[in-house]
Length: 107
Image 1: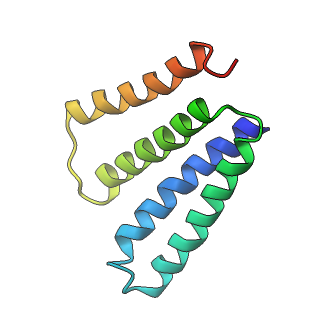
Image 2: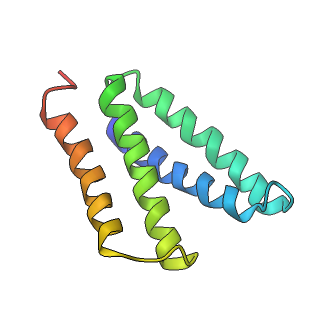
């Protein structure tokens, strides 16, 4: 259950990052409110998951999911640009998170 909450929190991290962009420096109300809700929920989920998951793998997974999902949304919907190097970099982030977990960092 902790991993499920952590993954959800990673997606919420992407939600607050995208909302932050859309808030235009907190000058737009709805994206600013969505930012605050997603940020609090994301950090709350991370904190709860860390009761059962060691800090290294938990934080790596949370930031990796958040960064990867945010980058994909940026490329697909926000005009951030797309390149093979970006895809390879995203794959390396995911490989790093998996590697941390397989290395026994959680044991």
